[in-house]
Length: 633
Image 1: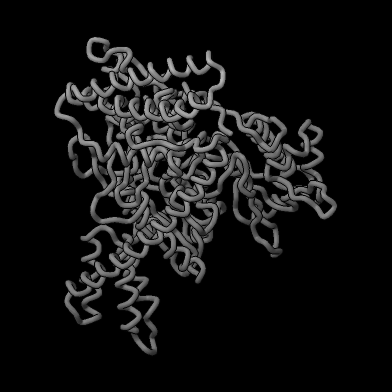
Image 2: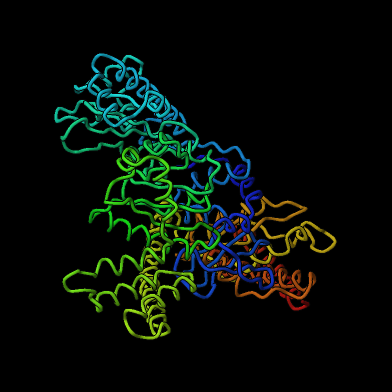
């Protein structure tokens, strides 16, 4: 459960204006009134339906219906929890964010747990490095020498050795004062059949994995012989998510080059750096991810990918290419060029550099293909056989499929012109087929997104019901009540100006019937500022925890907000606010009178009956006053 103070959340929202936050991912193509529009980053579309309102501090997609403030956007786009998103924005906009989190009842603070894991990893790196230079590490040193890794490289990358045996590291760290629960969270151990912790890495060359700031977050282990598996890597942990890191980025980001060379394995990255090429990183596996591409875009204008030349490598290259094109189609604010390279004769970069030298490898990098040329070559090469020549049917299918992935119309047309020479048709016909394939994919993906969103909404509503106040009809709210809250947000600081709105006409928590709407109004009043009112983005952070009539509160609020046109001037807005206020209070009086009737009839004590009748008369008088006030507007 997040424990971030509300004041910190408010400060993050006040600094992290929605336009700049979303603008890191989306290019705005037009402005209509107060709204900025661009292509939605959450689903595929060709006509912009994604709207940002800087005044309200909120975003909304009219296609997939996603809606929220800056924090909600980051949660969705970066796949982060609420506290992680607040911390993410705090780091970007200079707000110190700290939080604690329950962890199953032991009361440990998450920040302290992460700190202990980082300490364990640092101590483990020291252990492995010493082991490499011990008598037991000779086999590993010989292996490193066979890979032509220099002493300087071993030191630079902190390479070490995990000795044979099941508990060398375990005993070392226990002597350092770490307990088993902490060691379990480090990702450095597995559990034996007897339930004891045993070292994950045994008899392997150890490669520390650093984050972009040079902190050790995990390890990789390379075997020293033909045994399988060749590599063993740390699992995800409190401090490590494989899909969000690029190996050696802590060094490559210092390069003067605006290009990143991305290879599959860390041994390749190390070899490239040793050759004097300082802009190489490794993807820590074949499944390159959106998060890694986004990370690369922060440090480079161009990425050059090297994939293995075997079947698995080719399949991985196609998956990664499609993923990257889909991602950049949606993330129009992220600008990065994609190129695909291949090492001659199917060698990996490490082997090629050792045989041919660094300058020859640089030449291979320079010859990397633009993504459209790479996809065309794949369509041709995959369907060409020296005995049967080119399979035109399959070639045509691949060209149309690959062309539909290209979001750049110029690159799409270039591919079509190349293909037309082989298919003996006009390039316009091929482009039309690509466009249709793209539309069919859009329609299919949008339907999948719609169904997925419905499932997410149902799940979130269920979770909010569990967390909601255990009160009958706690989420009940009328449209008039929501309109009143919307109007109060719109008039902002005017609400505190007694020359325009009398104190008795300021909305109160008790004007509302449901517990959830009362909680939202209480939040509004507590966070109201006489100079600025309450930011809609700040209010959304509260609404995102509530339900109104079985619907996510922020969605209900937005529906009413969107349906109410902006009034021509301030006086008109004030009049609409008062109309909503009087209607809400009239309904409250009518409910009160209905509740008092049976109580008066059933009262046996004369004094109690007289008290109830006086209350009834006062309520009737107030109801008449409200009706008269409403009639004057």
